[in-house]
Amino acid sequence: MKIIHHKVLAQRYALALYEIADSSDLVEEVFQDMKLLDRVTTQNPELKRILISPIIPPSKKRNILVELFKNKINDISFTFLTLLTIKAREVILHDIVLSFIEIYEQDHHIYEVTIKVAAPISQQNKEKILQKLEPVIPGNIELEVEIDPRLIGGFQLYFDDYLYDASLLKQLRELKKELSENLYIKQI
Image 1 (cartoon, rainbow, N blue to C red):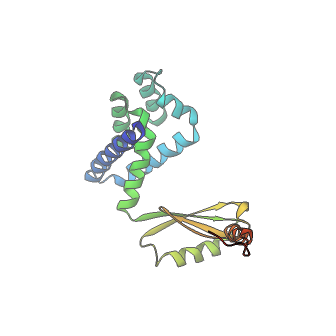
Image 2 (image 1 turned 120 degrees about the vertical axis):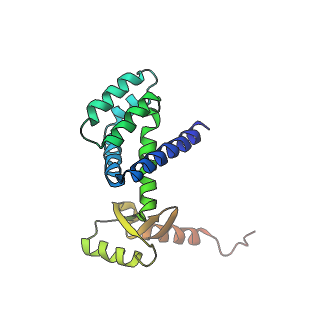
Image 3 (image 1 turned 60 degrees about the vertical axis):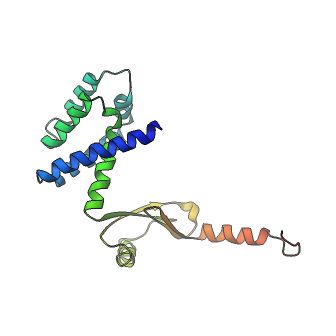
């Protein structure tokens, strides 16, 4: 129940920040700040542990965030960060950042699509994939390519909650399942 509460709370904070940035015509700048915060917290697990630690007082957390981001992010973003530490909400900072990015992408019709392939693909093939996706997905598509040798060949395409699996691995699994069924014994 606590995780759901954090997610809802993070969405509310993110929406409030988005509305403030939008009313100040600074959405792009704040979006870049949120991407920076996401990168920093993702690449530094120690920082994440510090922010969620109940042992470290909020004032120390505030000092750490101030030192890290002073003069590196927009005033709105910086004020927001300090407000979070005053309200002892730094525990959900990363969730707020992710929610803000999600709100921005929805508002600007940006869609993240991930394609998993067995081997690296050329830029030309990436462009062909984008051309095939443009009529199906209206908006701006950010294509991320992941390498997964287990697929053997083909690809898996992830978009929102959808998966299109055209991999050889899937075909081999289906073939194995078909061959494991005994056609001479009546199935019940």
